Image (tube, rainbow, N blue to C red; front, side, top):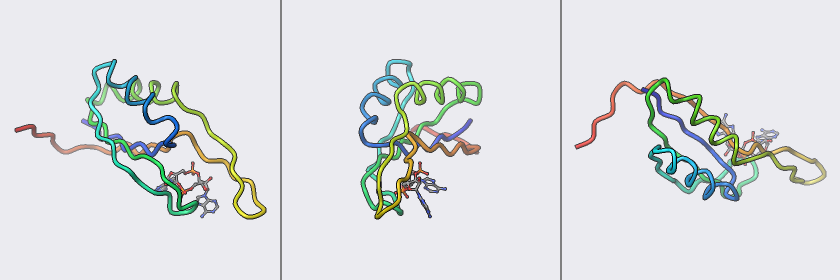
Length: 94
Ligand code: 2BA
């Protein structure tokens, strides 16, 4: 199993969760803050079987896109989503 940690722009959170839920994926939504911009974003925890990872990535990709923001005099590109995909040793539901 894998644990997908997805840090997503707040603007896309609802659509991503709706899409994942409609496709029978379970999510946990955490409020988070980017260390660089110090503005809010959302962290989603999604536990899935290995063979479902690609589909989950695709569903997330379909619902978000990057955006340009200015910080000081610099323009930076904030990704629609940043994903960490971790091997999960075990999942126990009691
Ligand atoms: P923030 O840390 O607020 O970063 C927002 C955007 O600022 C980043 O977009 C990137 O374009 C830029 N940025 C971040 N750190 C920078 C630096 N040291 N120098 C120059 N520009 C910098 P993304 O890379 O798409 O990241 C969006 C959000 O995803 C981040 O918000 C952070 O909350 C998370 N994130 C991204 N990479 C991460 C990582 N390796 N570890 C943990 N969180 C990460």
